[in-house]
Amino acid sequence: MNDFADVLEEAELQAGGMRAVDVDGVRVLVSRSEDGGVCAIANRCTHVGGPLDEGERDGNVVTCPWHGSRFDLCSGEVLHGPAREPQRRFEARLREGRVEVRVS
Image 1 (cartoon, rainbow, N blue to C red):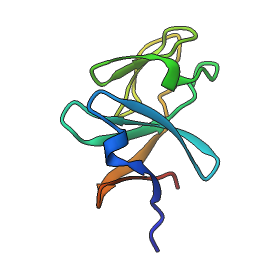
Image 2: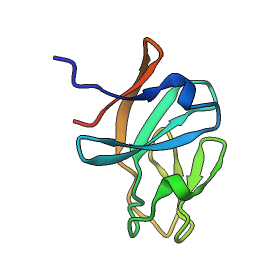
Image 3: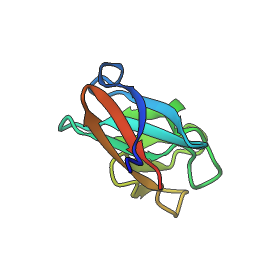
């Protein structure tokens, strides 16, 4: 069974881009890493739920627009608070020109 969900065309996710998608009711932030890979983390900040897709991106780091917490886009690691908990990380891959994400 393939439990990856097709979320968007690869061309819709340019280098340095981020896109919020819904996967089985989970809001996911998909991004293209600096090395060309695809990464996926939860889109709602672990601090108080700010929408990370509305934040600023610098390299492989996203800053929450609400309180400035910074997270690694590929690992979900907290790089600067006030958040203390990392973002949930999801598997992401490119397959036949499509971006796919697994949330389970």
